[in-house]
Amino acid sequence: MFVIERMATDLITIGPDFTIGEAKKIMSGNSIRHLPVIDGEGLLVGIVTDRDMRDAMPSTLKKKEDYEKTLATIMNYPIKDIMTREPLTIYPYYTLQDTLLIIQKKKVGALPVVDEEGHLQGILSTRDLLTAFVNVMGIDEPGSLLCILAEEKRGQMKKIIDIITEENISLGSVLTAKSWSENKRAIFPYLHTNNVMNVKKKLLDIGFELIDPMKWYLDHSPQKAD
Image 1 (cartoon, helix red, strand yellow):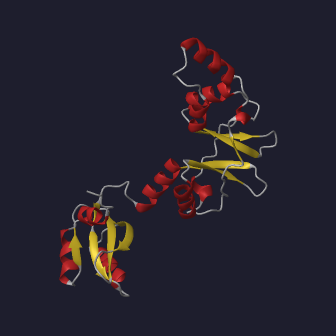
Image 2 (image 1 turned 90 degrees about the horizontal axis):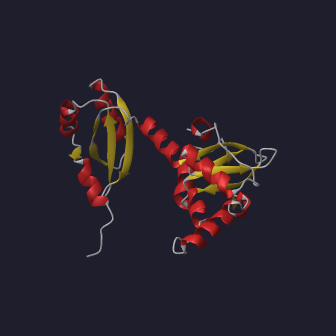
Image 3 (image 1 turned 135 degrees about the horizontal axis):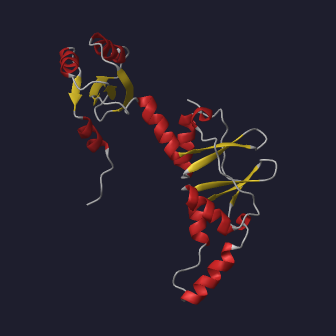
């Protein structure tokens, strides 16, 4: 999957000379947390986030008169004074997998999408990514998640898929992860059915081990210090 397939393109933008007050009104009125800043030619010159807005506000510890006076002054400053200049960007041909890693590493909530010249093309948020992966994994439909422990050797996945196919069950997705057991891997097929009794029996009959997915999660969660 590529960014161009999931990015938002119906964008709300502002210019660098918009005031902070105008930007704040636009963001609150449209319930958005990221506001791209572009110049007259559509080139991305910055981005404003809800955090930028909070950081720009005066301290509430000020006396009411001083607070209101300072706030009024700040609201008339140009947005270019607080925007993030040269923000991290991605291209439309990036994969969603690569974008997810960037967002995780850089700890950002959204990434502007630009072309090779720097013109704004769209924006991709963590919400867009979450929706995309929910769709591709098929978990937006009712079903059952299995956790199967399999030996690390060729042909194991084929055996599992063959059994699911024999039962005429639609497969939403398959995820894998290293198991706590040596030379084993946990395989998580998401099946679009709640009737998995026959599938489980056939898997057990040919030697696979089935465990509760929640048990696997709990056993692999970071342990808190006593």
